[in-house]
Length: 236
Picture 1 (cartoon, rainbow, N blue to C red):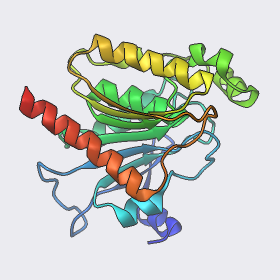
Picture 2 (picture 1 turned 135 degrees about the vertical axis):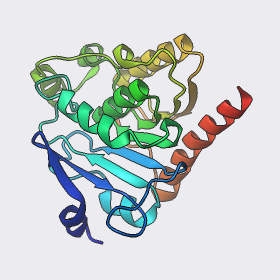
Picture 3 (picture 1 turned 120 degrees about the vertical axis):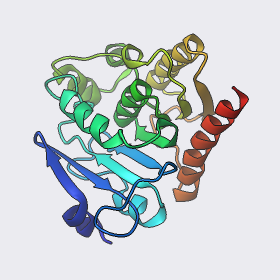
């Protein structure tokens, strides 16, 4: 399917929040098996009204997909700290084993992926994520800083970590000052939560760039997070 055809078939609206939910299988309402896997994806800063890599997710993976976009560039917080999106995530992910769910996002969307992923015990694949919005402000470039300041209420990822979270996190990051600051915040969360698993790909690039090279690299990262979660569970 093309991007527009996917929207025609799978885009939904709930409380004025647009999102795409794709469930694999035959029939109009295929059953969810115990091993069903779900990707929860968040489009990043300045992606506008487009969902992130939607045609690629549909055509090159066999995962179910729950995709969000944020044309306002408000880190998926909106006017109410993300309550509307949070309800959709809770409802749509309820049938899945959290061990089989991976939240994905880069930069602003990495904030959303970690925020919701760690709250619900999902796994996360993130690229140069922000974790502390106010702490990121001194390191942000003017456009990003202005958008952060426009958010009515801001919070930190650490405020949403479930104390028993078993999430497996794969994080790619470079050496932009904002990314180093937020990587330190992620390490603080990891060190405080012994049930978490963390794998880091560290790049010497000093710009705030997208480090995922292509689809095979992306697919490898998703599988890595799922495998880390499975190995940790078997060791426990």
